[in-house]
Image (cartoon, rainbow, N blue to C red; front, side, top):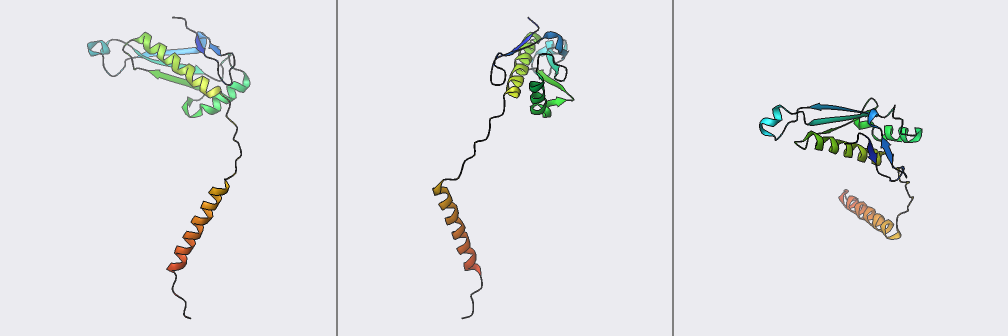
Length: 147
């Protein structure tokens, strides 16, 4: 299994990215869940970490975007993905790498600009009608005026 992780091309990364294996850190531990007696002996859970601050494959703009978008998932500047869904360590490693690539691809996509819109004539009419109805209801709740 090649150690590099490929991030497919997409918005913000027109040619895709290759994360060198040297910049990734993998840790293995015992996984919870199914596996019978095998689960007590195999370290099939994978934690894949990548330090975004020192990532050489990112441009400065991409680094800033990734750090801001992924901020809730980061510990410092380190992005960690955990996989323990499979019984096999190899499959968990592949799953973690796929998920890391997907997270980076989504994070590096530029935000879509907001298009200014204005309410339609009909929606303005509906709003005014609702306000008038509400006003009428409240007016009817008042004490009658002595005439």
